[in-house]
Image 1 (cartoon, rainbow, N blue to C red):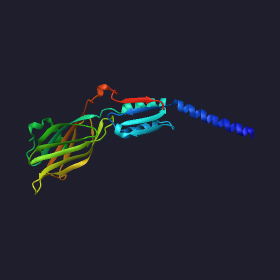
Image 2 (image 1 turned 45 degrees about the horizontal axis):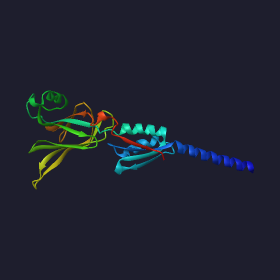
Image 3 (image 1 turned 120 degrees about the vertical axis):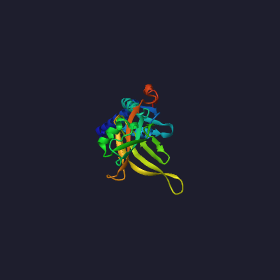
Amino acid sequence: MRKRVFFAALAAFSLFALALLAAEEAAVKVFILKYRQVEEAALLIRPHLSPAGSVTLTPRLRAITITDREENLRMIAKVIAEFDTPPRGFTFAVKLVRARAEVPAGSIEKEIGGLGAKLKTLFQFNDYSLIDSTVLRGIEGAPVAAQLGEEGNAYLLNFWIESAGSGDQVLLSPFSLSRLRRNPQGRIVPVALYRAPMAVTLNQTLVIGASKDEGSKNALILVLLVQETPRAGAERGTDGQKTVEKKP
């Protein structure tokens, strides 16, 4: 009986000692995010927590409080530093071209230059004329919109830049091209011509054709080139991210 009591007491003491040791090793860090959402950061952090680790979010302050062992906190600090970076910025060089089949072959307007010859290899049209061109700028997680053309022959281009991560592909969703027309009440309203998610590769020209049907004698062609711009604040590295350390 005494042996059982002795072993039970020893086991209880061992568990108590381990709990004290774990408490001594644990620390608390508060991370203040500058660019990203704390809910998104939490998804990246959780796989790096120990079984005894915990995360508390304070979205209003953009703060994440983490309690865990020092070695886990160091790994988590690195994960957050790599994640909490300025959003990527992009430029979108856009050309909207009208294609026609009912004109003599070779009638390609000078204003689209060598682009006309390239389009002739992709589509079965004889003439390509430029409606409008522009360069748009935007950052991931934000919308982009522009009107192309003039009144009576105007179009609306809009899309949302999804989070791009670190790869060379950018998802524009939804990507929409509409014709602007005046309705019977005299209001100008968009009439959708093309609407779909669009995955684009950086520094590669994308050609999108839009027509009523495959045999149409007229069509619109959108030429798009996406390039990345330097990140705002990139020269500061991770200086924008703040941490506060304290013992529990």
